[in-house]
Amino acid sequence: MAAASTLFDVKLALDEDATYCPVRATLALLGLKWVPRIIYELMGGKQRFNELATAVGGCNSRTLRDRLKGLEELGIIERNVIAVMPPWVEYGLTDKGVELGNALRRLEEWGRAYMSEPIAAE
Image 1 (cartoon, rainbow, N blue to C red):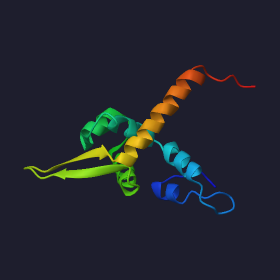
Image 2 (cartoon, rainbow, N blue to C red):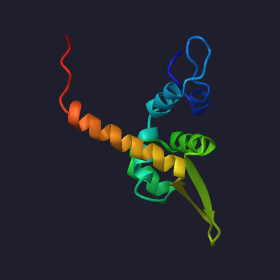
Image 3 (spheres, one colour):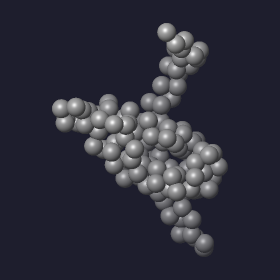
């Protein structure tokens, strides 16, 4: 299977024999540009769109909007409309998203322990 290019592709991450593999789906999700960074930034708490865009850095607004929408569809983040004048929106992690963020932190720890130096080409 080719690398997942959209969050929809992540939900359909199938092995060669057309069986669903949750590990493959998770790696496909985390392999999408900006997704780990978005999750990492939201680990610090809820943020408005522009705050998140600044924190993530380098991601254009359309891509960020698409990633947020996909992560919301997967139940990883929640979008809350704050009903004040003028109304505004904030994004935060769901319990599922917090668990994924914790897994990312464990991967970070592993990476710092075992991948802190570039691997030499053979």
